[in-house]
Amino acid sequence: MNPTVLFVAACISLATLALLRTTGPQRLLTDGGFIETAETTTREKPAGLLRWITTVDHADIGLLYLLLATVAGLWGGIDALMIRTELLTHETTVWSAETYNALFTTHGITMLFFFATPVFTGIANYFIPTLVGADDMAFPRVNAIAFWLLPPALLLVRAGLITEVIAKVLAPLGFPTAALFAIKPPTIGWTMYTPMSRAVANPEVDLFLLGLHLSGIATVMAAINIIVTIVEERDSSSINWANLDIFSWTMLTASGLIIFAFPLLGSAMIMLLLDRNFGTFFYSLEAGGPALWQHLFWFFGHPEVYILVLPAFGIVSYVLPKFAGRKLFGFKFVVYSTLAIGVLSFGVWAHHMFTTGMDPRLRASFMAVSLAIAIPSAVKTFNWITTLYNGKIRLTAPMIFCVGGISTFIIGGVTGVFLASIPMDLLLHDTYYVVGHFHLILVGIIVFAMFAASYYWYPILTGRMFNQRLARAHAWVSIVGTFLTFSPMLLMGLAGLPRRYAAYPEVFVPLQRAATVGALILFLGVGMWLWNMIQSYRVGEVVEDADVWNLKETNQFGLEWQWFEERLDRK
Ligand code: HEM
Ligand SMILES: [Cu+2]
Image (cartoon, rainbow, N blue to C red; front, top):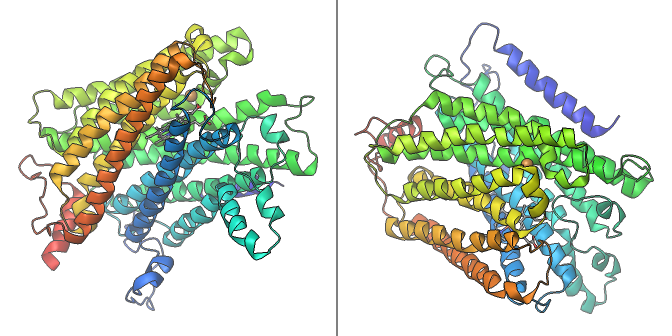
């Protein structure tokens, strides 16, 4: 039997077992998941590097996730800047067309799987145990394993570049390097469409698929851990489903989506690997054909975008009320809309395939469900706006990021509604309009929510305060940069410019340059953020009063801050 299927079966039965256990008599586990025995001993954490490679502590692992994601985000960001550099001129002048194809492939994959997903897992690891009143994740060791699968996965996915660098160093020393040079960065796009992904000879594509598979296993392990922690380790005497914080709710939903979506991608990739290496013909024209891959891929791929955006919604819903001075408006409806999006997201995959010539009646039903997703998304937006209404708004850096994120989300979301309608999609499919649309969401709310979280919780993570003026400047710079980078893409797409081409008609030069300037502004912002994070960690003002954000005044001093306060008091 296919190992992926076995693995998935094992995971699902584990999760089911865990869920079943809650129906027994309620008990309170405060031991972080393993049964305490008389011989339990407590040992000091080892110091230095050993601590970080052996840790099973949720907070440490959370920080490791954040570090890995930052590195991957910068790496994928360099790819983005290289893409934008190529597009400064309308001919293929800076990099080759081959390199350009590799760039948009590795950029997309690195950003989605090694940057955006791990950031939220990191935040969840750090805060969810505290927010649900547990003292660690349910399975601390599984937690560590899940994290440590990611670095090798990233190396496998990005091997083409690494092997080339190694080969270039080794070649002058007389080592045989032909095999290393044969491993070239993959050029198949993040969607890995067959027949191309099946046919390209580059051996890196196999490593790439294995690496992605590994990252999928890691993601599923982390998701199971998050679900079991929230369901089973929750201190049910004080935290019930009605007062569970909104971030945990969204992480719970996203983790549920992961459990169904990622194993499917894993299986689809195993079949692709078999096709490539062992002469099977799952995706051959005579059998499933390219449409089979697309169905399987998008049944994973569409939920994936909600796996990323739901936690971002959660952070916005969590942080925004703190600086509006009032509770989140319509908490219940924010939870319901999260669940509704989670369920609906599995019913819309074929809106990525409107142009493939499927039965028009089927196509229309996919259009209907896709349009329906706009409703719960709008519910959230209206809840945020009503939370702001009559609030005592304080424009701190996290708040500017939340409000900026909502405004870019409105544009990103509305442009998505147009794409969901078949006649528009036939015109706009595979144009820059699509790239503009999804980046307004990916950068405009997902990355903004991450920045908001990084500032909001910085004092807890480091015990120090960051430079607030620089942070506010970063927030404004990011909003300007996002609009300047991605609105021109919407316009270019409307004018018919297809995406994924290194060369393009000369008339688009001004808009492409505007987008490149926007990207540079965005990266200036990233530099400000990095500087602020590192400098403040070294010399920032030491936090003595845990109520850094003045939350007690409006009665919003959350559990994680109480935990922080106790830790400060004990010092
Ligand atoms: C801040 C900076 C960013 C810039 C300037 C940027 C730029 C671009 C450009 C120009 C393309 C498309 C190239 C083409 O179609 O020819 C692209 C593709 C893509 N980007 Fe970004 N991007 C940024 C951030 C992100 C982030 C944060 C994510 C995800 C979390 C992301 C995910 C993707 C994906 C999935 C693709 C599609 C790749 C493909 O076509 O296979 N990007 N990006
Ligand atoms: Cu979709």
